[in-house]
Amino acid sequence: MRSRLLTLLVPAAAVGALWLSIALSAAGTATARPHAIPKWKDPNGPPTESEVWLQRLAGRYEFDGVIEVVFYPDRQCAPLPPDPAQSENPPPPVEPFCRSVSGMGDCIAIGTGPGIQCILDVKWPDLYEVRYPEPDSLDARTGVFEVPGGVANLSPSMALYGMDPASGGLRYLLVDSKGIAKGTTGGQIGNRATFTTPCANSATLLGKLYPDRIDNRPPQTCTETVRLEAKPEAKVVFMSVDYEVNDELFSRYQFTLRHVEQTDVGSTVGDSAP
Amino acid sequence: MGAERSRSQPAEIGEVLVTGEKPTREVADLIPWLRRLLGQYTYEGQVDLGGKGKAEDRRSVRGVGLCIGFGVAPGVQCEINVRWPTVRGPDGSDVLGGVSTFDPAMILYGLEPDEIGIRYLQVDNRGLAEGATGFVVGDTATFKTACVDIPEGCQRTTRITAKADSDIIDMQIDTELDFQLAARFNFQMRRVGKVQAPGNP
Image (tube, rainbow over all chains, first blue to last red; front, side, top):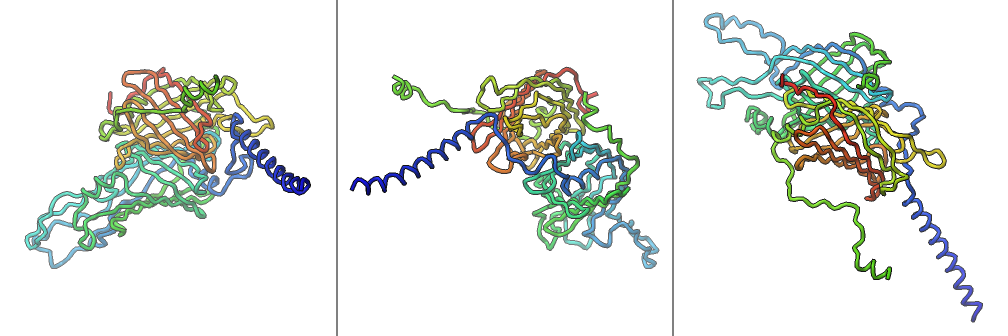
């Protein structure tokens, strides 16, 4: 009987001791100071594809491009041909829904890491949708309405780009000339990074758009998709921004960022600190 | 006696903050707070690498920073170089907060009109981006975000207290692992030079 009891107790004691050992070990780890930290990646390992891509953004750029409201295909940037039937007392020409863009940008590396900080000074004449009263129209909603992205807000503005290991992608924040921040986490595939986010200050913006816009639905949603294409060793970075209202493409930026001088490798943010 | 004492004294709680103040609910009220950030600063303070307040875990902090404003609100961009003596584990491994990643780092602050708060993004010297939308209560903005440098179970809370007409800004950064305070950085930013707000000649 005694030996049978021992046979039962000894394994139980062994299991108990094992659990106690594990518990003490865990407690020791939890209270150890300072805390050891797990790593996303080996800091001494090779740079990731996103890190390599991000570093391509460093440099000084000249911005050229156009902003257009693509929702109205007959009012895009190309001039309308003259209509012979309207030769006498023609109506005023329709103002095209586009604007030329020009400016400068300066993007520098943050220390020796792949983070990038950009100062932008990019301008265009503000673009609004003007609705005049029409004699035969029942639509009484006339006035000056906003279009997404139509009002110039990048002179000056600042942007930060960095790595987001949780998503395996990139993260950016842009603060515009009104102090309004917009940004999100995005992905990079090949030479292109894509960031999609709700339009900044969307509640206010949606209230200022022409109300019966799309399929007679009032504007309800607005999203902004930024695409940056930077090829290795290229002298040009392409940037586009698509604004969608009610999931329909409404307006678009298309910018060409031309390198005007190579970034001085030694002149990083850290070196210029006060 | 010991048992009697432990029964009569409540257990120590890490932090309880009870306030009757509500977050600022007007974007216009956030602008004065943002303007308080502008300036050239020296950084002093301590990092507590265990978060337990033990003297042996503390390291002194030194650094400089420059926060400039741009645009009408303004947006604020800060460039900081903050460092402390490097601490490593017994086997030379990295420990939480043992090496400054703010040498240098850039931080961008702007208005978040949809949530009526302040949004920031910080990119450190490893290129890691960490940011959130924070809310201002009184003179303090609080930002909570998942740690970008630790895969799971880590939360970082940054509190920035910027009082009107003061040349001192307090910044406290708490890192919690599994809801336990694991590191606390206390930075005192002392304004040593003024930076003109845009639009204020």
